[in-house]
Length: 359
Image (tube, rainbow, N blue to C red; front, side, top):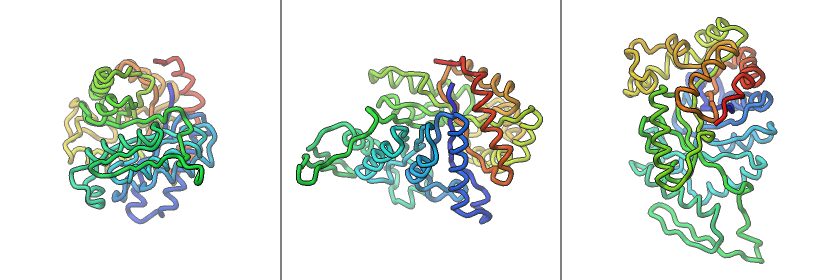
C-alpha cells in the first residue's frame, strides 16, 4: 500500500482575501516536503484557472519547485488540462520536468471540468475532442523519431529531422515510459474508459465504495478490450485521511479544523447542488443527512493509527484491492502541528500496519 498527497489546493481563506497566493503556494510546498520527509510515495498538483477556492493555474511550476525541496517522492499533475495547452509545448515541458525530477514525474491528463475555465479559454464544448487530439500529439512527441507531421483539427506538429547544425531536436523523456493517469468521478467515467483504452492508469475521486467498484469495472473492461493488462497496483483511490494519537483527537481535528469546514460548508453543498451527492453517499442517506459529521464517521479515514489502518483494510477489501491511497491536502496553516503530526503518523505507523496489503 502506497500513500499519496493531492494538492488541489483548497483555500477558502484565499478565496475570501485572508491569504495571499504566495501563502497558498508555500503551504502546498510545505505539505509536499512533509510527505517526502515521512516516506509518502506520491504528490500531485491540480490545475484550475478561475476557481478562487482552488487556486492552482500552474501545476508544472509547482512540480518544478517541489522537485528542488524533495528527494524521493514522485511528483505529478492531476491533471494537465489538455484543451488549454498547445500540446507541442506541453510535451516538452513535461519531458523537462521528467529530467528535473530525476525521473520522479507522473503525468495526468484531463479535459477540464469547470465551465468558467472553458469560457476563459473559449473552447466551448470541444474540450474532450481537444484532449484526445492532444494526447495523440503528446504520445507521438515522446515516442516517435523525426521527422513527422501531424495535421490535426486543433493543432499541427511538424517535427524536423535531426540537424547536426543545431544538435536537435534533442529532447526525449528520462523515463522509458512516462506514466500517465486520468481521474474519474462518475460511475461509468468516460475519462477512466479513455485511460483503459490508452494503457494509462486510473485515479478515482472521493466517491462511495459502490461507485469505486464501477470505476474499476469501467477501466478494466476498456483496458482489456484494447489489449492492455489492467493492474490494480496502479489504481489510485482518493480518500481523505487524518490521523492523531487517539480517535477523539483525530475526530476533533477534523470537525473543528479545515477538513470539517471544507466538506461541511463547501464541498457537500456544492455536490448536492450539482446533483452528485449520491456519488459520495451511495444513496445510503438522505442529502440533508450528508454532513461533515457523517463524513468523518462513515466516509473519511479518521482516527488513531490502528483505527485508520483498519478502515484502509476494509476499503481495500470492499473494492478488491488497489495500490495507492491519495489524500487531499487541507489548509491547516493556522494549526500546522496537528496536520504535520498526521503526516508523520501515516508514514511511520499506518504505512507499517497496512504494508501487507499488496496487489
